[in-house]
Length: 267
Image (cartoon, rainbow, N blue to C red; front, side, top):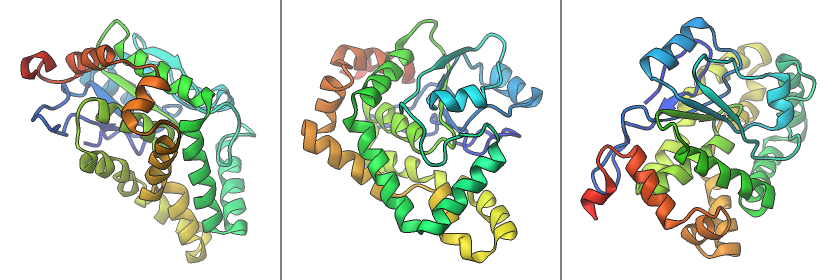
């Protein structure tokens, strides 16, 4: 369910989903988003007073949150937890959002959209193969268990790749079907249509494929994740245990904290 803020496009509560046991997530306790560096007073008030946000987990690279730090919300804990260790195409380099994004678009347009898809596939494989990223996703899951308990929001820059995989992990651990997990992941494509149209008006229709690649997600990216997991760990459960060091006891606590009904009640 989209949370409509003035200055984000991809902020969503996961509470509208129902898992394989008929349980839903506690109301607005788990929220995924794009970056929070442009929030205004209205946005801050909505997140704090309507959604009772307790913790924000920023998954961006260090240079991203240094150049464009999240807007601070009084009473909300901010945790910096970069998923990738260094700059990537599309990640802020100059500290100027517009210049960075224009350079990114032109680079992809020059090389072709296919090159971007190949690049993103490699990034997704790195998310599950590098020690840095695995440690970061392990920390992310532990932050969900950290006191004080309450609504948590996690985000990267666009809220689709690094935050997308974080969401896949959380929903899987909370016993949601893979069908629903994939649907939630691909839903990002709906929320960036206005951005695509806006840039098409500025740049022309020849940029359509590139813009859809930049703003969108593809099932091929998820396939790359699971291929990488299968090759190294065998399956997702083994990856979560051996790479992220998130145990079955941790999983039970996650369910207890975030599902509407205690997991113990259905065991």
